[in-house]
Image (tube, rainbow, N blue to C red; front, side):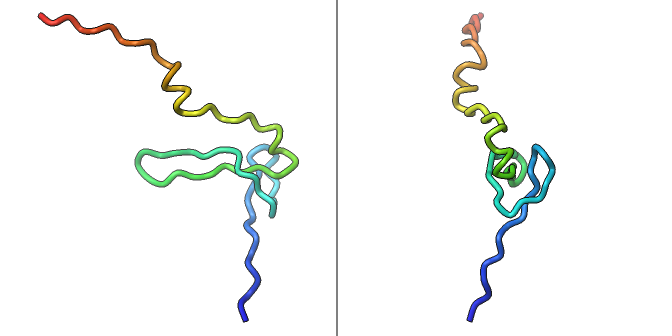
Length: 71
């Protein structure tokens, strides 16, 4: 007979309360190691702004660089 699965307990990024019903509101990526998820409680989750999509940032973040002159 197996033990019942434990529900995760996470801290809400907005109110700081511990919740057994965490909602993932963001993913933080790291270039030198594993990233992590950011959680909110169900009450605060609708109030957390969605992070921008990385591909949208790349497309709109920097104007095209002028070509270098070859000398």
